[in-house]
Length: 137
Image 1 (cartoon, rainbow, N blue to C red):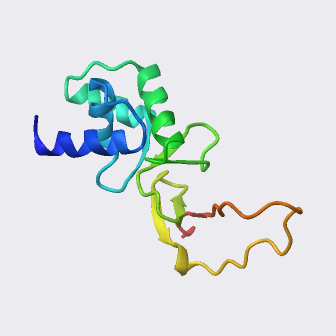
Image 2 (image 1 turned 180 degrees about the horizontal axis):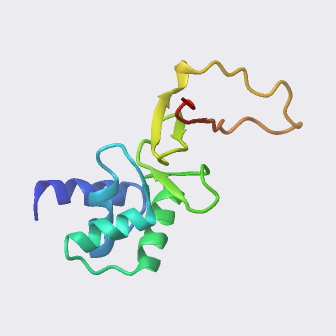
């Protein structure tokens, strides 16, 4: 077993994910380097490598990884789910012309947060997506 596969296996196990062969293949594609991917992109990359993994398995695996803290599911596009391998606090910029997502450091955006929260609650996070497009000529 390669050292990289052993590291991925240990990372999955540390997050309570059983490291099946298909999960290891998907994890190898999405966990490093920091990136934003859709299930369709993961499926296409697996197919390009000659790997046979069902669309349902890819979706289920990405959702499992998100539920266990290995990925963040992003709500930037109502047509498809995006997943982010950078789970540290940060925001996003979406280029609406291309659909590309780019990380924005959390200290690069001034956010004061909600002034009042319902009694008995605390803020669990703030999601910000800055949408940009090319200027019209």
